[in-house]
Image (cartoon, rainbow, N blue to C red; front, side):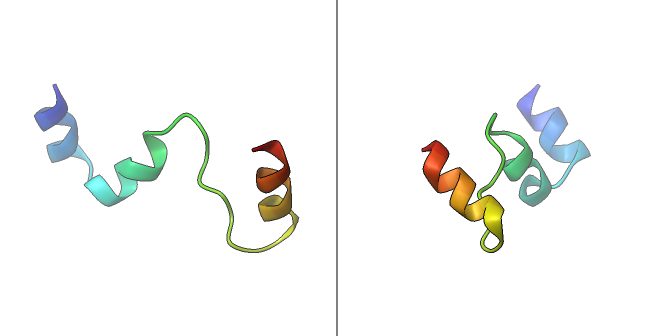
Length: 38
């Protein structure tokens, strides 16, 4: 299962999509909101 998925898509693109929470933006109000949510 895992091997099949990894082979289908690159790990780099899969990594950020794996976690339920989106990656915290490095800039913009989104970063502040992500920090406040935590």
